[in-house]
Image (tube, rainbow, N blue to C red; front, side):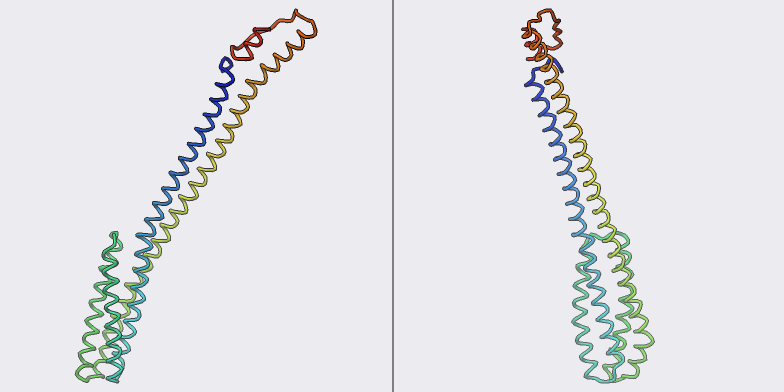
Length: 250
């Protein structure tokens, strides 16, 4: 190292620092890309399904209230209104279900969905039985079926969709924790690289400074001795760089 030209030493020092900066930038870009990929996956999958599950739970709740209210009513006009509104909500439920089924579901989500559809089939069967009784004017029979069959089926129906919604909420929170963990790791890696860069930079700067100033100080000392008229001092040349050549000349 001491035989290298001063310009070569400075060049190597700058190249070392530039390489450290490039490594830090590369690691930072990699970690940011990883964060971006995880965040996109979270937004597209977990958050999207969670939003649909919440919407489905809300629609099921509204539909069950309308259906049960119609089943317990003894007014034909009110029953007609409840059935009409429930039919509109049914369309919305079917649309939401179609959107959920088009997502990339895991095995647990598929199991929740199968259970929900089974409970829905029982609920719809009870609803149709109530509607048929009300259609022929048997309001009392409709109320009895509403209490005996529709109410338990409704509760099971709502419970199944609530389980699906709660699972999606937990899944979103877990995936969000993963993203936060990646962000924390990226931050720590960047801090570590920054610390390492500063340390290596200080070492390189110190080595360059010592490698240049120490021979120059020796050359200055010898020049002062020679200038004082003392030509008997011994000059040891230990390098072939510019300062070594200066020492050799003296």
